[in-house]
Image (tube, rainbow, N blue to C red; front, side, top):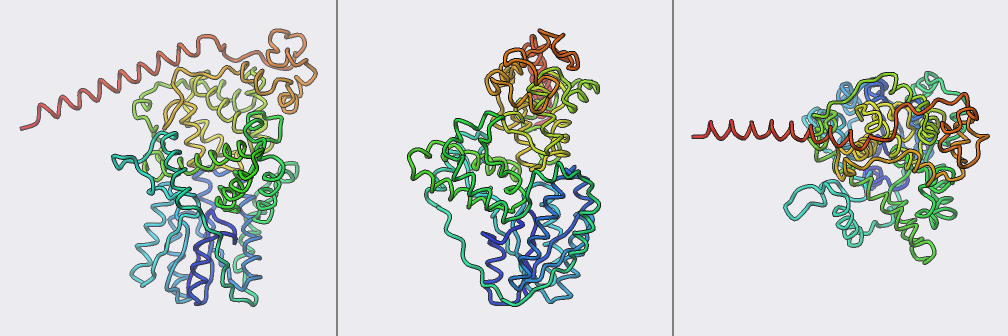
Length: 488
């Protein structure tokens, strides 16, 4: 008996572990470990849990229709996974386990514990990398080190994809008959515990079938104009497939193949190439997460920035969380996040930079808040985006670059349509006043003035970063001096 362990890959199409297990010709069963306490630890948003659980229900039914049993095990957290799988293996005479690799530290430790537990039982372990287009260890610099600058990584990534084009997925050798969905009640019970308003869940459709439909629609209707429209939040210019990709209801290769097909059309080539770049960013952050486990412990990628002295103004943090900063586009973005479970990518950069530079609040607090609300909350991408914006991470923007909330608003929401949608108290203002309502306070009496001025932010950030670098260099110099003095 072969066992396929589903994690963040809740689909049948393009699922290498499932296909390989079925290809052996031996009986195959599947398992999913339900770990709600681990979700709590990882601050997984309620909406994301809802999406995953509904997708799991669809997956279980689809597997059963193909003749494969799915067992849902209640494990609470990762510490209980190894023993739960051991019991299943012993009960059913499992000889091999197939799964896709995951790269954050807690997941790696979980998988190591599973490997140590199952090897004495004679179970062979088979890992795949369906969660990325290029495996994390495949690309290295000339010095043999991981890439930490996206531009150089992307050039090698393009070369890899050119020489290793993804093949069409093999057709699984389904056993036929009717399988069982063992533990469906556990999934349904977990869903009952998630109390979400219909206005929120009605915005989204879980599962593989919906993800494939959404990909087709995006490729047909929006991919050609992606480069021109992706930065304007009032337009439907992005794919909104990040949730499906992070939960694995959609195979990344399917996205890449759709883009490559669009490139055959000269009119769609530019947009398709730009979107492929976003797929490369996903791989980049995953290889960073895999190669630098300290990021999973809350460390900054650039060690000197761990010495930054952040402010701890709770009132300002709450103003940011609630969309009451007095900067309309920032507030509209934060309200979009809280009311829909999603935020436009351009606005993720803006709000992250505003928190970490205008308010000078530790980026980790914002990272956690995003995870608590984002339906597409993905640790590698979320951490990478926050550290990029805060200038603490790989390929970070220069520390002296600070987005102007007003300029961003005027440039990317020129008519104020997005602001009007999420900040209704400003909807009556003209397309000039809506970006700076504090200049006409009597026209928007219910909207707060800016919580901090934009003027002087760059200078303050520059001074604090330089101080952190000086402190780091002094400490590093002291360490080197001490080592040199102690040398024989």
